[in-house]
Image 1 (cartoon, helix red, strand yellow):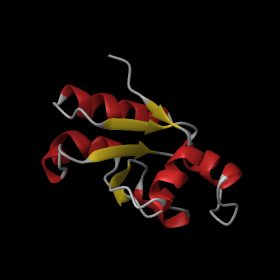
Image 2: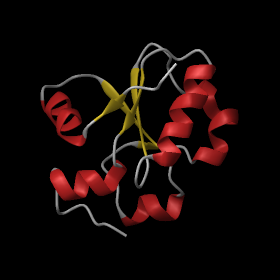
Image 3: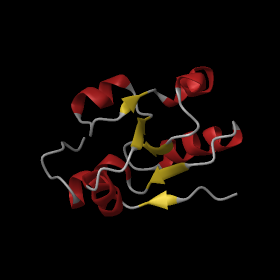
Image 4: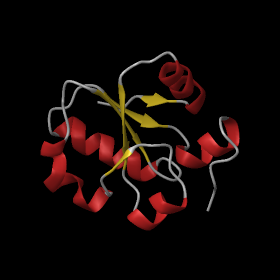
Length: 106
């Protein structure tokens, strides 16, 4: 199954509308310290052993710097039985470019 993607503009709209979306940031801690949009940090190398920290009933949006690590994370979660998982297309760089320029790019 292909993992669905969500564009940053759609994510912003849904967050502003108060939807209960769980943002899962799978970058490294050092990247998260440089810039983040408030997601829960679980670095991709730790995700398989920390999957029990996540609630499969929630809609999860995985994000990273540009979208490739978060796609791997979304696939891992899908394979673990999570049905409501999205990948943030373009990652935090797209968020910085098209939603909030105050979010640093690195």
